[in-house]
Image 1 (cartoon, rainbow, N blue to C red):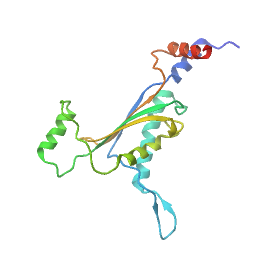
Image 2: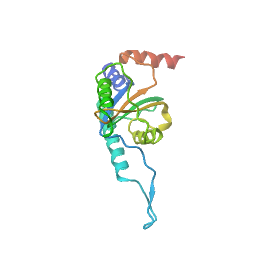
Image 3: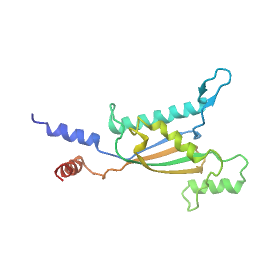
Image 4: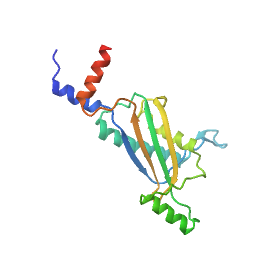
Length: 184
């Protein structure tokens, strides 16, 4: 059976690994511990945690569809995650600190204003588990994760997800790499 070369190239282009990036607007939320109700005896998750997980999943799903098509498969390869959680500045901040923040966001060479208060970074990382089954097949595929908690005028969570494959410019490059692996 002969495979149409154009169809094969189109399939390879669709499946070729690519870096994904997306923003989730709004104040980032950390994964909260499950609560226990004494009245009912049941465990439950806080509403804000559930809604933020749903929001995170929704944005990730849109990005996956844009990059891999309607019927995409979660990435099954090793993955690197880079995330920035940007929080609103505190109302009690002095004017000089707000000016510093604006200078940073304008691109001036000043360091970012880091968040050294709650939420803890490990709970922010746990929230990223909402991407399992959407972006990656299993969270064990994440081999590297770099997190920054900073202040900014626009609260958001920004993610850059990179599959750890060799990067190919064209589907032909990827096809040549695959065929080289088969013969090796």
